[in-house]
Image 1 (tube, rainbow, N blue to C red):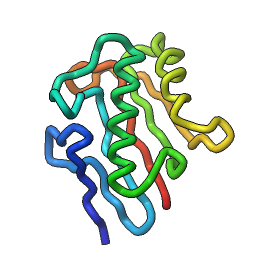
Image 2 (image 1 turned 120 degrees about the vertical axis):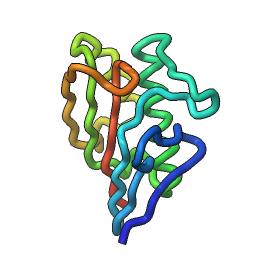
Image 3 (image 1 turned 60 degrees about the vertical axis):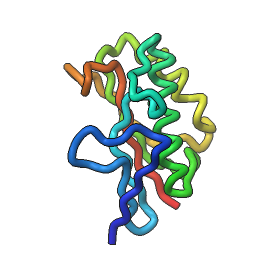
Length: 126
């Protein structure tokens, strides 16, 4: 059985999906972009600020499911320009212990929703 996870501390979905779905002990988050849930504005000041907002949105979704980044077993990062990889990775890495960091892939794509620079989704397990 699945349980829908939604929190006002992360951006509301902009389509027919939810912020996350919990099935058993496994949480599947939808991809997050850099919407500030307080202002509904995109945070695009820099690639670092954009990535930080994405990670804060994911943190809020994880917390709504009573989880933390320590529960994350897999991340998928989609970026519009691989030249931003280092800066994205630097911010992303501050949210994890390097010894217990999740598996991950990073993929460059042609476009992302709202033409942002980065989108991240995660799978976490209790």
